Image (cartoon, rainbow, N blue to C red; front, side):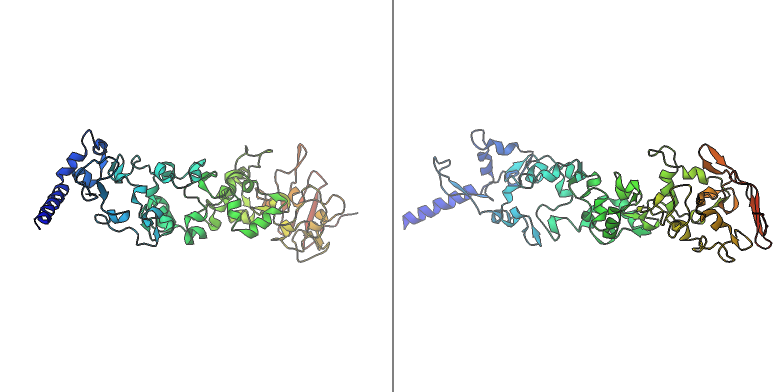
Length: 445
């Protein structure tokens, strides 16, 4: 009995010794665990010199050759939960947390980075890439946080209610940094449906990509993955719009996210078109400078007056010359036949060129004689519309080309004049003729 009392007293003394924070000071002597005191960020118990919250002494002697006299107070996350809140109760849990392996990421005694991480502050890359595939983080174009290894800017390292351990929904995580984008988006008149309804990751890889703006695939392929009818159209188009095929693809004309203009155009339709077609130094041969053609002109073609180019031209591509929406001859001379002039007759009277005699379909007639038919439908060298008319703008009424049509190096003058019931011309291609709808001018054959 006396012996039991002595043993009990000895164990009590040992417990008191081991639970004393001063004991920690004896653990980090130069002969023993000196490295523990050298960390920039020590674990709180270590900082307090208290080893006993985590370590329990099992043997009186320490150190013991070939054996251990201290053991952990518990295993895995059970050791940490006495001080830290449980971290495995949300929908998505980081595997090391789920497995209770806190030391997979955190150093138990201390580290030179915050949160007991052995990485530079703000750069978790080396730690995370110890487990995660590094390939997405070595792309030509990198998302800012991924480029600098700041993984926890977007991801929660322990658990989350969202997929991929995100700190919120994809949209909210992105807009947390892209605050300027968020403000403009809210006020935008037109928003791209994927931006309005879906996550940013529908188009962007959030880490990095070989494509600019870390897009998932290059343009226009990325857009055509959703816009299937356009993909089918572009695959067989004879006259494509070059910007669609060039770097930037659809984004050369459209805003990918939102816009003040219909069709998500980057600006109003005319401004977008004249952004390229308002200069004389683009393309080989150079594009016609339509902006210069329009400047100061008294008369504008109806669609141009309304600010629309797509009324006549298909902005993506067309089977027809000049990307027109209907047929129109490439050559200067082409006799009328069904479909040949549909590019103009989509809007203009569809029977304009069908009948040699009419009182309905045109005012350009001598009595009942259809002078449009005379000029265009003649079997030999039918004149195309552009010999007399300018397609965009002119100083001449009815868009008559006052400067004259180009005929090699010569500009053929028209000398066209309009009267109340007719008019007349003296062009470089025939003698002077007049016409009158009410009192036809008679010419000898």
